[in-house]
Length: 306
Image (cartoon, rainbow, N blue to C red; front, top):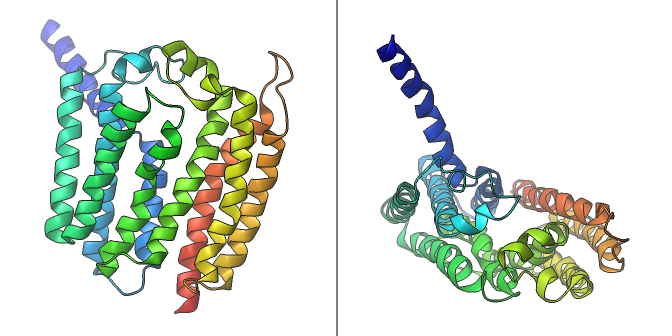
């Protein structure tokens, strides 16, 4: 009876362990990373063998997941102090930190070497830089020290379309640099919109996010400033002839709406402690949809131009 019960417990606990390992990779967050990497690969001129293309995207996914796991390993104590992250596997004690670190290290190493041997060493090198950028430059150095952490650290999430593009072409040109820049400038208003309505979480654990250090008014103005810059930047691939009108018009419409939502956030003040921050939540939700649709338009445009 005891043996059967123990076996049953072990059998039911194993899938939970795997789910916790998967949770370390932040699957919701990296879904956008994988998608923009795939769009960079599909929009690039030239062709890549489907197996190699799949391998490149797999490596981007593994690298991003490994970097995310390293982030959770390093920030386990901080995550425990924030309501938004307290239920993650490490704060809850469902995984030990050594397992998390080793799992993350294997994912990162395999992703880089597989990319190098199967696809090319230039995309592998850029992938390695992106992993180091997120897990060390952003997580360890910038995030706990400066309110500009998201501005400078935004480069970490901007690499995937560049990697996907280079996996096909083998070299870096203006187009993938512009795709990198679009995500780089999108990141601050996207993340600060979130930071505005979870400010107390960051303040509680001492993370100097912009709303905590500079205040809400300054953060709102900076969200608006980045949204203004984003509109011409997203249209730049069309203006230099790298895309057609479908992408260009889509970029102007999508970025115009992004700017309108940012104006609502940028020019308002919180209406007391009971303010539900609806405009900020709407901007954050739209910013995710925005990037998905913008990069999807890039791929559709590519196939229209063929």
